[in-house]
Length: 366
Ligand SMILES: *Cc1c(COP(=O)(O)O)cnc(C)c1O
Image (cartoon, rainbow, N blue to C red; front, side, top):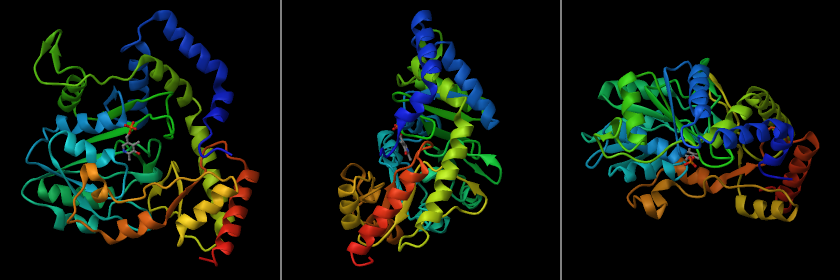
């Protein structure tokens, strides 16, 4: 059993993928070829936003977003402390300081109740992360941001395809980012990312930043980055996009089966916040004695992952030794992600549930 089975997806799409890659090699426009513009157009259309800007990774997308908003040294950006390292690293990479807030323990999403206390005169933006496939309480976050004149950037690296009150993740804020890392719900065969915005001037600035700060042909008005989505990756993503909605339906079915199979066990199942649909980037349970149970699952041949074993304020690269947030502490000690992908079979899920029941029992019904 695989934690994320990319081979099953590849088997389904093999002829289309090989044709798409061969077409790029034949036309030879490896950088900013026609597939990039086509993908940007399709993704913007899907989200109902004016602009999609492809770039080299989700991490670059976050950094380009912060630079596009003019955030730099002496600025602060509010970040949930339970996330992937990139959520805080992007802030440090532009010279600003991440200020951490706590999460809602059941959904693992930014808890808006902690925002006001984290705001200082230096705060410029809030960076909510749509973790594990669903959006945070964007209305509550927007209300605080509006009161204090702050930008909101949604990190939709794990939530492309999700909705909140019927509106797509990536289109809920003036600016949003996503990632096409292979294991994300919409994943390429290498690194890739994108930014989404309705704002024409901001879009032009973001594009310029991602392309060496170019203003017009060969005139570089600002210090930029070299961050583009490869044509080959765009070609792969166009093929995968054709089956993406079918894959989302399969992901939902897999999550619902887990919900049923795990209901009798002493674990906390993931919760969907009101108004949300999730793309189930992860199926994350919470349990006592996580490490011992996980070791037993390894022995039983069940692959699992711990996203994330420590709050960001304890990661040396972005540490804040004065910070300690109760839900982040509790969740990082209890979280366990089970195998999750659109092609997971019912019998495999039954094996996961049985192995988990056995492991919990052996650990004294922990
Ligand atoms: C994956 C991820 C990123 C970074 O994306 P890359 O494409 O790997 O650079 C950022 N934020 C979150 C929440 C992610 O899961």
